[in-house]
Amino acid sequence: MSTNNVILEVKNLKQFFRVDRKTTTRAVDDVSFKIFEGETFSVVGESGSGKSTLGRTLIRIYDGVAGEVEFMGKKISGKLDKETKHFITTNMQMIFQDPMASLNPRKKVLDTVAFGLDVNKLVSDPVERKNKVIEVLKSVGLSEDHINRFPHQFSGGQRQRIGVARALVLKPKFIIADEIISALDVSIQAQVINLMKKLQRELGLTYLFIAHDLSMVRYISDRVAVMHLGHIVEMGTVDDVYNHPMHPYTKSLLSAIPHPDPDSEKKRKRFVYDMSTIIYNDSHMVQLSDTHSILTTDKDFELWSKGDYSLSLK
Ligand SMILES: Nc1ncnc2c1ncn2[C@@H]1O[C@H](COP(=O)(O)OP(=O)(O)O)[C@@H](O)[C@H]1O
Ligand SMILES: [Mg+2]
Image (cartoon, rainbow, N blue to C red; front, side):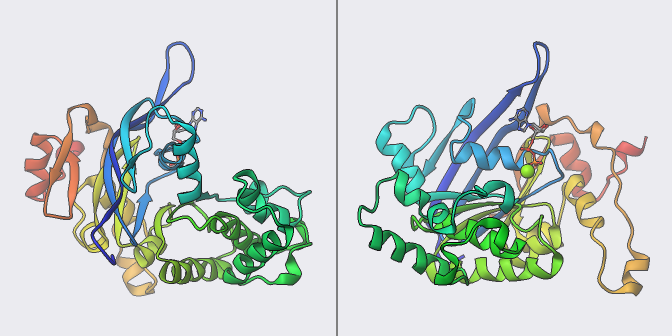
């Protein structure tokens, strides 16, 4: 964390999807957190826990059914005027999991990357437009030669670099990266992560990093939020969450990570907890320290503080 300025503050955000007349999925259910300028804040959790919906609601792909979001001192929740929409697109960008699916196969890299400049009418001169694209391509490790090629002419890792370039061309302050390495070969994942870290240092970017790979998250994050069924159930620094987890959902996720060392891997014990015993409706956030909090009931908190996780086994 380079500073303690809050860049994004989310209060009681909710986003629900109507499945049919009787059923509603509470994809993001009363979530509150702050992100500091220059940090990497990661959101982890199993598939379906609401991570992507959270990202999409923040950047206003979805409108959200309740809650308040303040970004760089400006309210970006509720009804938006034209100026606020422009403020969001130029300062906040999202990068998606599957670069092939998010790139138009019939568009040259030049036009794909220039898209944000074009729709926001930020350049009028084609030479300036091309130069801006070349500059941003170089910053992600691609070159001028690439501008007239099409997505299928690139490898998966290169395509994700195009995705990063497209997000960066507007010089945003804040990037939501949704599982951006999940579709890539393991050998390429580290390259993309190192690129993201380099860009963060050079450009002073703030990241909301969405992932299900907990080992990678540990390596790149300052703070981590664990999501389960639309709720943030635990939040803290990497040290808080990885070395002192208290919520049983966090403990079970962490116990599922294989150890690189074969001897300790043999001794690894899975932490199993019957999550159906947890009633989130009755829960509230409890602060364990300045940086560390969990979602719990008074009763569970008393037990968990004593290291007693046996209740669910009855
Ligand atoms: N556009 C949508 N319409 C209806 N249900 C959705 C939609 N997007 C996500 N959901 C549901 O919301 C829940 C959270 O999904 P998602 O945010 O994609 O989770 P994650 O990214 O953690 O895998 C899931 O139950 C999913 O089926
Ligand atoms: Mg997702």
